[in-house]
Image (cartoon, rainbow over all chains, first blue to last red; front, side, top):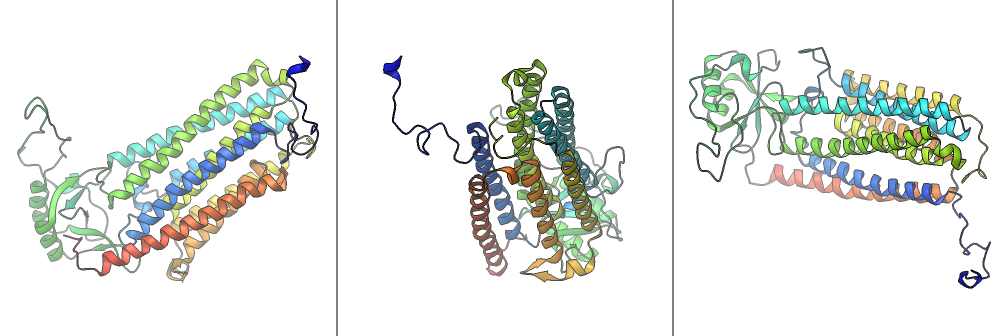
Length: 326
Length: 120
């Protein structure tokens, strides 16, 4: 036994090992360094978002118009109310987390259990809310027309209010069916066809005198440009190339395709962090229930998972600002 | 315990709730400003950004400070650890933003002023 122990003569000195120069335990310090690197990853994404936004500064979609849904209030324009609620839920779950950490410091097991339980519930509600946001975003509400150049043309009435395709387009007899493997070339297929064909939209637009076209370019007041009736007719006839409903990675009815790409990627990556945070919280929650940390004599594990959870909240604060507010 | 040497474990619940109130009020102010969009904040710009957006960003940093300091308890960590985390991120992120935003603006100018049509 004695032979395997290497004595360096530096025990107790700064570089002798076993001390904590930053006065944080190994696990906590590494959690901090992980968080730091993760923060840099997120800022990379958000900075890339900023880059693309500056690149399309005069045609970027207006977030208030895109995220204006609220549960059980269909058709009501509720800009950002729901995201604000989600932010509150996440901040509140951060509060219960820090209360759990605080209770852990005082070795009060039942309080740790209670507050961690609340934290997990908050996280799950947030995840559900995000799924609902995605659903609305993917489904879309009004529908739009894409041009040959890949830009978006939306429809408004004379008051400047948005008009959905379903409100004015009359469907003609279906001109073609979706190309699937079973009914066309067997080695290729196409995505689901939109509800209306571009020809239907063009014909119905000509028939409805009171509908105008709104382009994606922003005017001096930061509002989308609305064309006159004559301009609208000319533009739709000459440039309209296809119908787009909702959003996917290659096109979306809100405007610049990159907007949807970044939305999916950044909120998706954040949502993935929330998901893993909830899972880790659940593991630690059961460890607390089983008394693992009571026997260990400290609740530092709760503190470490708490750091991760607060970080998720911290990232959301920035995502909220740059996606929904600015 | 790992950090028992740095502080005593009295309950911080009062401060925690206080920080919660601060974060909530700031978020509420942000949302209200975002919905109202007061004219004087939208019309005036500083460093070619709307005053409203400056307010949003400053309030966000204010919230981030409270989350990191109070909830993540950076205020109780040693100065060395705090600086390793805060300075690293602040300097690297500032640099990244500086490069990418200026570059994005440059590409916007190129799009706008060159002879290639993009709206067709």
